Image (cartoon, rainbow, N blue to C red):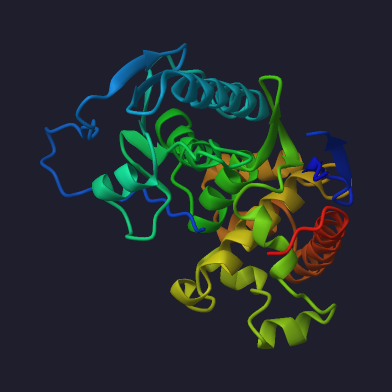
Length: 303
């Protein structure tokens, strides 16, 4: 029997419990300074209101409640994680949930291959029927929304996508989302075993299996359109490393970095020399890949 497992920090160990591609954008269409952005609500959508969200949904009521509960779990985890950096907000956030991928595709205002996206003021996603984790698309986008509308951060791609990937792919059980305890049935985690890092950093850079840290920080690496999954694994992996390497050695500094805008100069000042961090991060990714490969082999998973 396949076991659903969570990938945890600290050398990326596994804890057990029995049992595509994603796009996101905060790019907004041009509008006059006096107009407020408006969410695109599908016809026939029902409204579910929770403590922090207004969920407009064409999915089944039980599915809507499941996604709404997951979003509330994410909200609680986010506010706890960034308690010293982010002030609570009483303004409700907007989610739009479609019944299935086909309805989402017909209403998609992002890239044609998108599975979900954030376009202020709403996150748009569909309920993943038959998926082990049917709400992780929405959770990833909800992190972008929290970064933008609650924290008020303007972050470079590596940090914005890194935090979204980190929290959006975190393990959710009994209403509690645990940051750093990663769900292997979420994007981009399910691509981790395919990174094929060899143990030679320089060789992997040359073969475009590993993106230099400075290139990632400054968005100057290989064309992301040709290496989408590789980039999102790096975004997720760097944030996971910064929160959990050596029992959270860089966690406090990383939170400060995010609150300051995550510039390269601040990275070097708060975290450390890029070349030194790069080597430790590369080794961390190697360990993560090994753990994921062992999990897949144990459960007979082929990707």
